[in-house]
Image (tube, rainbow, N blue to C red):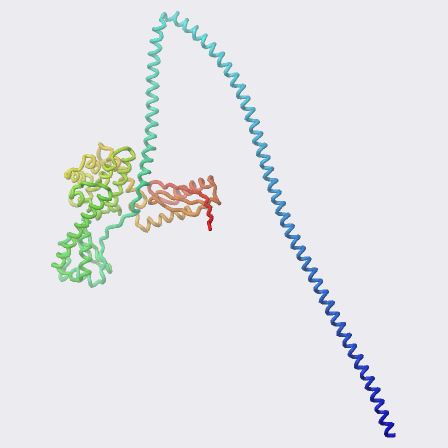
Length: 516
C-alpha cells in the first residue's frame, strides 16, 4: 500500500512535470511569437517611417529642382523680354532714323528744285539787269554830256567818300572788339598769375601782450615807487599797462619795432628774475641788437626769396622792419613778397621785364616801415626813400602811385596796383583769423559734399578754387555739369566772399587689377 502510494505519487509527479514542461514550453512559444510579432511590427513601422522619409526627401528634392528650374525659366523669360524690348527700341530707332532720312531726302530734293529755279531766275534777272544798265548808261551819257572818263572820276569820288565812312565804322567796330579781347586777356593773365603763386593763407598778428607767472611779478615789474617801470618805458619808448587782468601785462606803442623790443626784453627780465634799472637797460640794449640783426636778416631773406639783388643796405633794413608791421591783420613783408611774385608773373605774361616787376612789387610798401617816424602817407615816404638810394624811376613811381593817386606813367605801376589789390582781397588775406579761415574752407568742402554723386571735395588756391571728385558710377557728363552749376549757386546763396570761386568737377572711372 505504501509502495502503491509512492508509485502513484511518482506517476502523478511525472505527469505533472510533463504537463508543466509542456505548459512552460507553450508559454515560451507564445512569448517568442509575441516578441517576434512586436519585432515585425517595429520593423514594419521603421520601414514605413523610412519609406515616408524617403518619399518626403524625394518630394523636397523634386520641389527644389522644380523651384530652381522655375527660377532659371523666369530668368530666361526676363532676359528674353528684355531682349525683345531692346529689339523693339532698336526697331523703333531704326524706323525713326529711316523716317528722318526720308524727310531729309525730300527736303534736299525740294531744296535742289528751289535752288535750280532760283538760279534760273537769277540768271534771267542778271541778263535783264545787264541790259538795263547798258540802257541807263547810254541815257546817262546823253543827259549828262559827260565822257566815260569824267563819269568814272565822279563815281570814284563818290565811292571814296562812302569808303571813308565805312572805314570809320569798321575801325570803331574793331576797336570795340580789341577792347573786349584785351579785357579777356587781362583776366586770363591775372588768373594764371594768381594760380601760379599761392601764399600763406593768413598772416599772424604782432602781439602786444606778455604772460607773467603770477600777480606778484606785476609788483616786481613796477618796482619801488615805480622806478622799474619808468626805467623800462624810458629805455624802450613804449607804455606798459598793468591792470587787474590776471597773468597778462600789456605793452603799448605805435612803433612795431619798439613794441617787439619791449616785449622780448620784458620776457627776458621775467625769466631772469632780476628786475632793476641797470639790468633793464642792459637787457633792452642787448635785445635791440638782436632785433636789428633780425631785421637785417628778414630783409635779406625777403630780397633773396624775391630774387632781387643789388638793394641798398638801408633799403634792406627798412624792408626787414616790415616784418613787424601789419595792415588789417596782414603781415606787410609777406604781402610785399606776394605782390612781388604776382607783379613779376604779370609782367612776364604781357612781355615786360619780370625782374623789374618783382622789384617794384617788393618795394611798393617800403614807406610803411617809416610812416610812424615821418609825416605823409607811405607812398610818398617810400618813393622819397627809394629815390634817395638810387632805385630806378619805374620802382620809385610804383611806390608813389600804386594807390592810383597820380597819373600812371609806367606800366609797372599799374601791374603793382593790380597785384596789390589781388593780394589784399584774396580769401584769407585780411580781416580773417586762422580759425575763421579754416572754418570757411571746411564750409566750402562740406557744401560740395552734400550733393549726390560727390565723393570728395578739396578747397585749393587759398579758397579761390574748389576741386570736386564725382562718382563715375552715379553721374554722367551732364550730371557732373549740373553738380558744378548747383555748387556754384549754393556758394552764392550761402557764403560771403571777396572775388570769385571756381568750381571744377572731375569725373573719372578707375579700374584696378593685381598681377600675382
